[in-house]
Image (cartoon, rainbow, N blue to C red; front, side, top):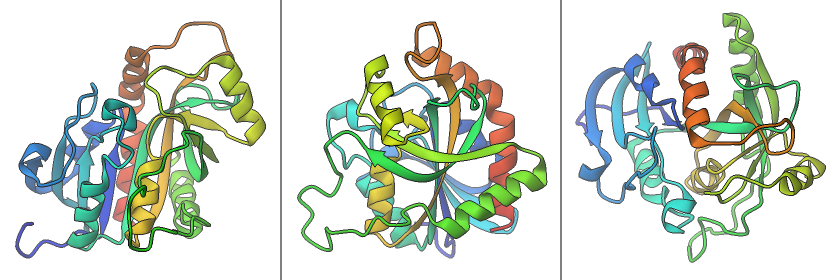
Length: 253
């Protein structure tokens, strides 16, 4: 894509976290619209731009925003982007997202390293794929990389929990009954993204590490209405600690 530049790590920036792209010593910034098979992003907080460059010594490809299943009803919206970063030479995908907390000990502003996920949508981005469609999802979130992320968090003084992420399709927020069901299933955080990219990344042979920012308590845990504006506000307020952790992790990769 850029002659002589080969990224080792790709980073997907979730809702309200796009500002981390400013941490990259960029060699190129390319709108998704100029890239074949990259998605059109329609959600506030997702700029839709690929930033190539370095964080410390590490060459990175930063995807400033993602497309979601709920935008056009396609679970494989990110297939072209994931395939492109794999073809560029990336070996690891760092996933970030804004999520709802299912735990009272993880209030808004908390971070959680993703240890596993639950696909609650009934759809899969590999529908219709012929080659190697039966992907092993054991250790989908690489245990060694998660351990390293947690160690780096401790090193830089950022509190980071560990837990299971559950994917709901959205765009409506979950009902309190759905959240009660998710807690019984063993979920710690809920969101409308990430899981399909992880499946696509594993299909492409990439390792995955995931980081969720809690922007609200999930429905029914506390009183009050949920809104996307709240997600963006908390993400903006917490962007500093997210950036510090990502920067330190990528520097030490």
